[in-house]
Length: 512
Image (cartoon, rainbow, N blue to C red; front, side):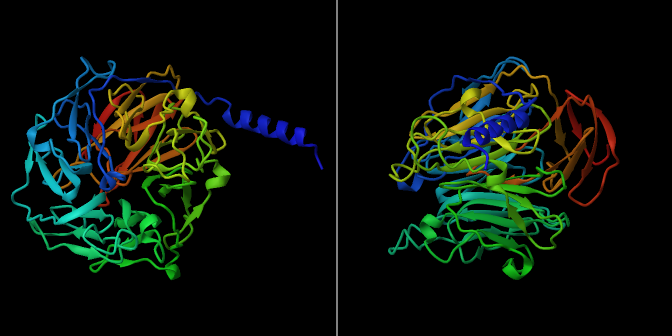
């Protein structure tokens, strides 16, 4: 048997080899007007962030949930594209709402202006965008929401519908006198009938969904609905769920390959990490996080848990001096150092004062190494905040080709970091534009082929924790100066491969 010193030395050498050529990015704090996600137990969860362009200038705004405080819209106001980040709090009266737990951007009516689905501890809202960052409630969709505690959302277009199908994930039934434990509410499904929405469908049983995502997991042109559920309140008998979106939705079963998982599910992120063309998932939780690779050979919905082998458990704080288990919330994949390999960002923070979980719990930024494993660099990169993180975003906020970070914190100031790295990797920003009723091409797949890999991206609305982004797709390209690109559009049309130069912003439509 080798001496322990040799084993330790071998591990260090292997780690250095895996990290060879991996650049750690640098992030600089951005000054922001005061915004705090606050409130009682109905706002222990939530705190989402919607990122989208509401005035047509190509730069994304931030709409941050406030809980018992007022939600705020931060308009992106740098002097020129690529300049240092700056935001101005300019919230129209229609969005200055209380009780907001989160929000997701989506062009619901297909008019080219982004709308908002606003989640609340109370009635949810669909707000129609009309340009210049102005919004008003839709008055013609037939959308009616009761008083729920909503914490998740996703949307997709089914068939030839002119309106998207909407899924709202609800948490604990606050009206049940036997609660809160064991009183999970159902997920609510809104399907259109022509130009209006039908009566709500309840997807039961509900297990306290905190993240909801429509995804075409098997590349058939048809999205199903995945839910990540919080075992803290479903207590027993519950699990993660995948609903087959048939005429009458049904749960996938173990006979079809679905493997039951029970965790304190907080958020879902999806991305093809291993290059097989199928979407893998990262699930946040209290304790260890779950990284699962889709089994491309399986006919059913099968994901293999590879968390430990890839170094992505993020189960304890890496700085701050608190060794208790970590609590993950929002998760996002993205290439923060433009080396052509997607990395993972996770917001972290105690639910409130849970004694068995870390109080000082820094956000995670895990870089993907050359061998496919991941290494933590949050502290070195400058994003290791010890506030109670909730919703977040990993988005290029000034269109300079570098991914920036924003986080909504519970009982603490919202934080934004600009990626100010000096990197030698190339990049591409891509926007898909299709016609009505689905202008943002939700459900499309984009393939970008470099010299040594193919990057596949599914266009979705949903997932994360109580918030998401809509707009440019960012691809890190490493040393590639030219890439080949093609799109599978939502109707199944496959574009031809076309050569595209790196380090630019392009817009594609089905006619291109």
